[in-house]
Structure formats: structure tokens, C-alpha cells
Length: 178
Image 1: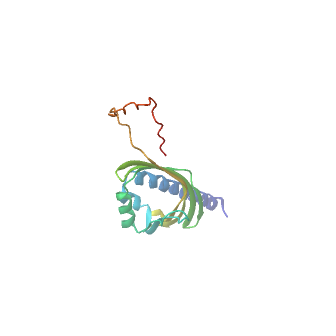
Image 2: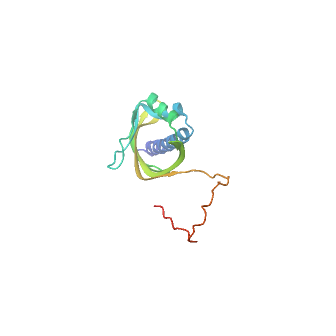
Image 3: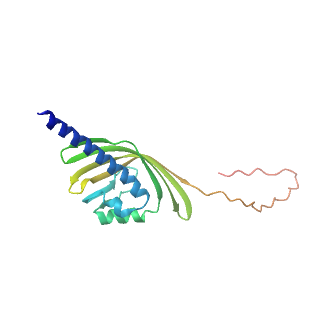
């Protein structure tokens, strides 16, 4: 192989990796801003997103097609931020795969109460080179852990609590609540 041909192949590999990195950066950026059209455009026309079914979790959504993906992003009730780690890409011609570790934090209203969730997991992603450039064909979300907290918020008012009268014995009963 000539030095020029070798240099061309190496440059193509670097350009592919940079485009895939840009794609992954745009994934979190657009989703967290609820820009459904831009987020869905990162997928192939037939691309899909799903959550891995684990023994202790409910069925995950399987969203396929840009219209469904855009609607999902735009209607997500959570205000969130994705923190993606560097992907490990394996590029093979016009397809590629990666595993991306992710941390995720979100706030939302659950049954009228403010709630927060944070999770750690990974995305297993398959990409395809298209006429539009590299796009996500398949993205599977797997949680390693997920925590949900109800956040009641601070109420600055002082509650009106009337103390019970002192018992005739002079001793207050001990009340234990479980």
C-alpha cells in the first residue's frame, strides 16, 4: 500500500471518529433541550431507541422512526441532563458500534410532588453511514442503578402546632411512630 493511500485511510478513520463524537455530543445536547426534531435527525430514518428489559424493570419503550423519536423527546416530562463518558467506537466500513457509559439526572412532578432521579448505566449503540453522514441506527439503554427521591421543598412558614395539655400524672406518654 502506498504511503498516500495509507494516509488517506488513516485520515478517513480519524474523520469518522470525530463525526461520531460530534454525533454523541449532539445527542445529549438536543435531548436535554427538548429539541425533538434535531434529536430525531441524529437517527437513521428507521432508527430506534429502547431500554433493555431487566428482570426487575417494566417493559421499555421501543421507539422507531424519526417522528416517534421527536415526539418522545418533546413530550418527556423530565427536565434532565445527560453526562456521557467517552465512547469506545469500533468502526467497520459503513457501520460502527460503541458502548457509552452515562450518568443522568432529572427533575419532574410525580403525583403532584416534585421528584428527582439519577441513574447510571450505558448505551449500546449501532451507527450507520448514510447520505446525511453517520447516524444512530439502534440505541439500547441499560441501567446499572437508578435512584428516585421525592423532593418536598422547604416551607419557610412556621406550623401552628398546639401542645397537648399536661396529663394529670405529670408524665407525658411516649409515642412511637413507625
